[in-house]
Length: 393
Image (cartoon, rainbow, N blue to C red; front, side, top):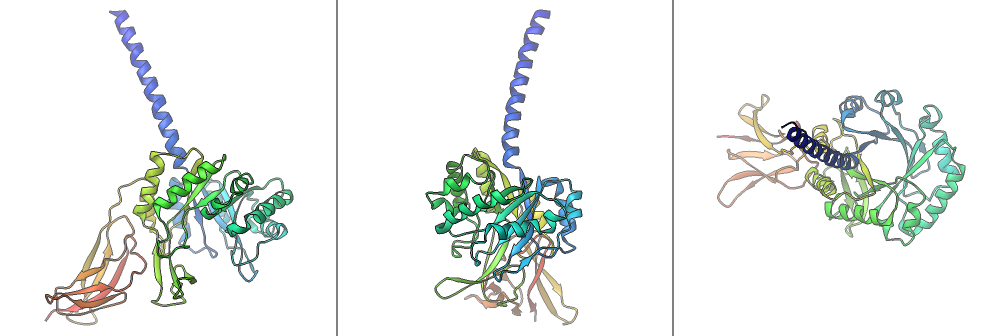
């Protein structure tokens, strides 16, 4: 009896060990993919950044922040970063330096000066450096030469990284480019084709898989949370891009935004079949409450924590205290996901009108509704938007 007990106890222990190893392997596999950093991309640090940073700490593995920028006119800008706030989080910090693609390719000395004169390096000694320079594919050879020159001039304590764009992978010298930098960031969102949108999960997955084949080093992928409004010429060329504010064109322009459900579908695909060199995800950019063309913090946390996405926009009827008998029609997002505005909202009264981007329409059966005439920025969670009014006779 004792022998039987020991025998079966030993077999049970073997099963436990095997199962534990299997679980550990799977967990390691997923944790590698779910390693997640986030970009803080503000030139002027506003008060709403602090609560967003504090709420984000449990979900991420590091911060990447805009530390310096060369603008098109050659002006150098150093954002008002709250370094003490970032350091209190005890997460790794990476300072990102951006060079506008409309400028000529900078020299190694220009890049070196931008870095070593920045508060991030000079005062706060942040040595993880990332260059954001989306140089044309046709001049990739010049960029490789630039990086080779730069690495000979950088202080030894600097660890250099860069962002990459998918179009570079068309070049036969792209593998040579991957040998310059150990852990680059592949950006899979763009506005190169406005008709296709800001983010296409099938294309993004293809880019990641191709990158995995062309490099022998680990890499990150940058995924979008933001939206933009673009202005195009009659031939389709982009001549203006707007972020949060409609400061150039008022109601004109085409809205592009990253659909959380599409981003989730890419993450699911990566978890089902993880590319061997993919080290993690970097989110562009940290959501804050006054960033109207970005996901809400609720939506982003639901995505990165794999919470069920629940979308629900309702219409509330609110009596207008300044106009007796009139009822304001207000859209309210009660879900945990950023959603596009509904195309139509039915009215139960025969008198009313819409506010942009809605207008009053009548069906062939005489039913009244407010119809969306132009898609604007989506409605974030816990947001409200007044879209019109009605009065019942």
